[in-house]
Length: 327
Image (tube, rainbow, N blue to C red):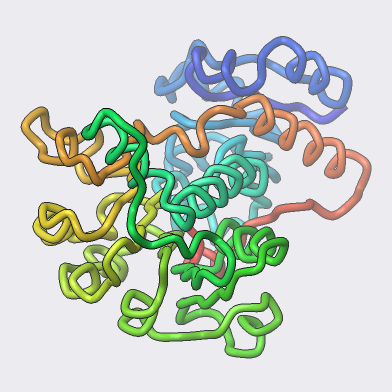
């Protein structure tokens, strides 16, 4: 059997893999649990020297030159979480080691949460809740358009944005998208019209953000976008807070014209004196859109290890080129 290491903080191991997935891995590989040694490269060196496979998740050590020098036999890393940023390095890519991510499993709950928020937002459920509670009687916004015929904009058409668009095909809505890495033909294949950001914010009833957290996307969404939104429009962010110029967003939210569903902020959590806690037109959640199905991530790793050991191609490999656009 191939030699494999389980390598991440122990609390993460218990959360993502648990006894069930660890047991399944032991049936596939000669698995050694080194989670108690995370961060101590010297102590890990005798174990890394023999390892062909590393199974990991959040809190894994950076795969830099020093780590790789200690793991001369390493051929595959199976990562039971989403983004690989901060984990991989040029030295890792230069070694040609296979790496997979559980980004598809990680995307599923984010997609489900986002679509739920889109439906509630388009139907003005959030606004109705605020009005009813404040007036202490049944109350609803003047607009009664609802979901039917609404225009929904999706920013970023990676794994999550793509699946959001696929799910929205079930509804009688119009969709558009913005993603500089997506061809117009691919966008139309998803049933979405490719548009620029300015047009999206100006014309959509709901805008949902799924762009990758890259240097080029920091503060990509600014006050001018929020100021152009229609009265009663909803902005959803389940991506990363730093993609939005938060101060400019708050300035527009103070006017009470638009509504925001924010699962992420910058910083996380918001400072105690942040207006986001008090604004009635903000639905604020503690970065939970993708954090409830951790065992699904471990199951994804087990399947990737099974495929690797049986000679099948990986289901969700990540390459150096993909890092230019993925979260």
